[in-house]
Amino acid sequence: MRIPVGVKVGVFSLVVMGSYTYYANSIPQIESKPPQELSLEGGNVTPAQLVKAGEEIYKTKGTCEICHRIGQKGTRAPDLAGVGGRAAKAKAGMSAKQYIIESLINPNAFLVEGYPPIMPAVDKPPIALNRSELWALTAFLESLGGTVDVALNDIPATAGAAAAGGGAPAEVRMPGDAKAGKAVYTGKGGCLACHKAADIPGSPVGPDLTQIAKIQTPDYIMKKILDPKGMGTVSGFPPGVMPQTFGTTLTAKEYTDLVAFLLTLK
Image (cartoon, rainbow, N blue to C red; front, side, top):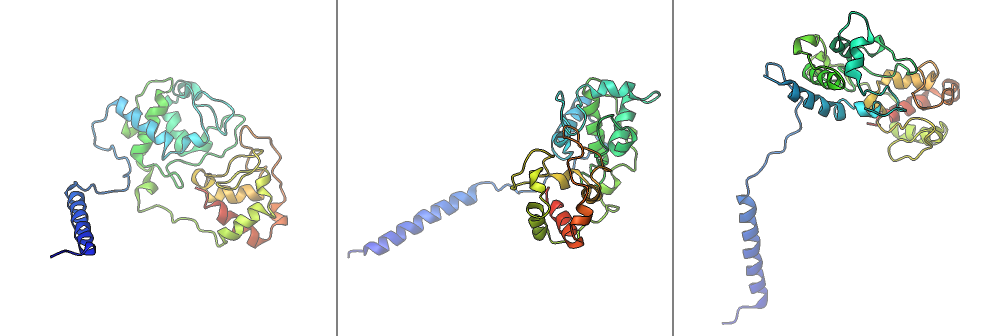
């Protein structure tokens, strides 16, 4: 008896699919998990391991490279080359690790001449490093021209508490419409005349705003629009270029819409 071609094809297809299914199921499955926060408390960590972890934080979660460079001037914030050595001499009676830790959790404590106070506290949102991450980042910064001697006990117990949970403040949400705010950005606000933002091209007269919500607090963003001069000039960019009139030229709705849009830039 001749078997119809269609039946042959169907049987062949079932055999092939069954083989692939068996092969796929025989492969060990790897569970995908989101990255966990770094926790070093109670661990036996060498200085070299600590520095390596701190360098990774510097380049990733800490978002430090958005403003700082190592061995390169002309960025938004001071060059950090040799900061471990300089920090030891920056303030009388203060060790390098004390100076660095204070600079990370209270950036306005030691302002560098020529740079505005735009750095957020790294243990609070939006960066929100925990205590272990602060320890590692401090070690990495110490290693840049200095001696790594920071211990976990040098990091205040309260540092990073908000990042660890419980006391973390709720995310700030503006009542504005981010979509309408994007229209203000590209239209009436004229922001693209000086700034690039994500997929919106713009002139490099002012800083790139692509990650502004990741490196600055909502409070800073709101104040910067209304009082650009009062909030300081970002290093490497000309002062006095940003209009001081947005508080009167934008309506209340346009202002809140614009801020809502800027808060999406992460």
